[in-house]
Length: 139
Image (cartoon, rainbow, N blue to C red; front, top):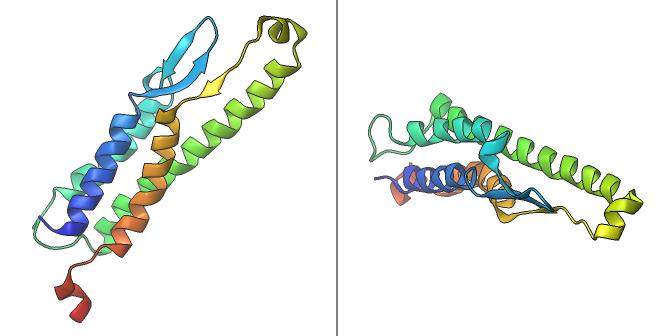
């Protein structure tokens, strides 16, 4: 398999797995996985580059429209993840202003799954453009 395709497959696979990991930890409720909300959207968006990396001749790099078809959904995932982090941070500041929540010591925290989704969404385009075979560079 081509190095670029393999890298896209691995990063998209990690991103897809991260949708099932914890995204938020809240008191009383506990840990909330990505699949309890927008994780299903990110899973579908990561499925696109996964499928594209397995299409056509696997010994050649992904080029042209297929390359952008793999990159654009992953960038959307990165935007969704960053938006969720900003949204959670604003909700956490609202909880922090509540005297009842302060008395209980309620803390809502973002978990590693959401950070991994953002990292995979942002790194997939970088990996797709940077990893090339030596034959491609000489052409």
